Length: 277
Image (tube, rainbow, N blue to C red; front, side, top):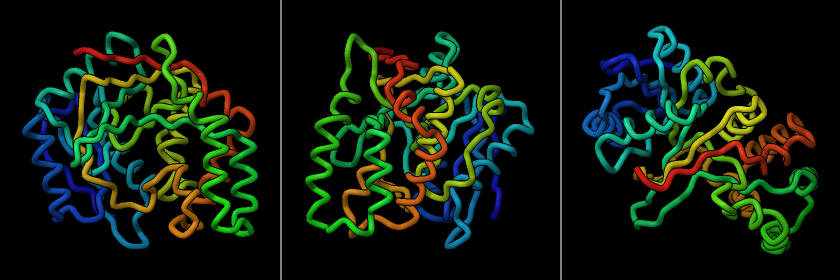
């Protein structure tokens, strides 16, 4: 595991794990963050690859390194996203200050122009427990039906906007900016999760502490596509031929950690939504 620092002003620091700092993906990330930033933040890149790549550990190493500079704000980022307009960091940090947020995320646009909102409409606790427990025994043809049932009863309700209250969890990844003191208080990522669900667990834990999260529709980041095993979230479980044992186990670990509180946090209203700059 290597830590590489790109210099900047230390009030705001960006932390990003990467498999190869020399890759086109990583170099584009550095270039875009630097050219579009208002604050010119240092970038702390934590590099590892192959079996050594562990998103939670890498991110925590980067956070620990960033804290040595006593920053006010820390961005936790993947290396496959970057802002589409200059000054996105200024807008997001101003939101944190004005509304007392623990963290805030932008929305994301893929190469085809499709917008993706980093909100997870959380499935029912018992649905996930049953699915992951009997996963090896369920035939492939049953998964599309199970997904439809879950979507009908749970996800549609949780993803709906009602009177500007968002139902679901605002995910910390692929990019979010944190109040550094709050991030330090809650302790970073849970390293029991390897390359899957660690970002969702962190998002849930923040709500369990009573902190607020923000989602800013006025700030857009390009998302070129994840290169890690964690791609797909809960929906990956419905594609049995693509889901990995590690991902299934991560979901079991998540629900066992939160038990019945899981659904409570998933539907709470500890969020602020912003539509205009």
